[in-house]
Image (cartoon, rainbow, N blue to C red; front, side, top):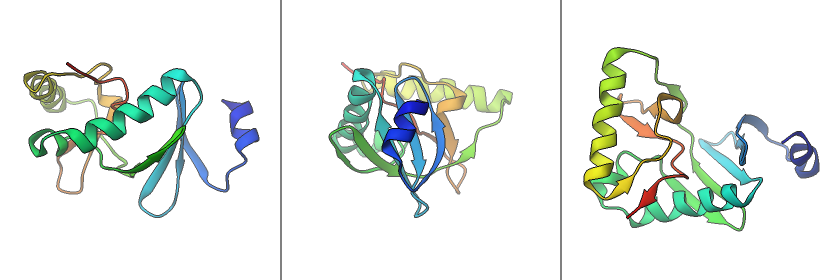
Length: 133
């Protein structure tokens, strides 16, 4: 990750990373996710495809994806973290069921991968490992 960050040398603040992607704040209400591996490439592709090809009843629970290209995806920046509270765990469980009922397996759906919108709706900000069946 450190090597990729230095090689990319982007003029944006890095606000997160995992094993497969780096996330930059574009400072315009959006984030840029850059793939670091094949799984990162697949995650970017899945986020773009799932958001743009889902029904509105599911899309409302996904962080909006603006655009994507080879190895990158631009998404809306939603950074209101979801605290560990019983009602939030229940909401996460309800959200899991909504995805499953719509034939989407929400792999890696956890509190760390969701955020609250300004109207306090829980949305998934990292759904690159979700599988549509």
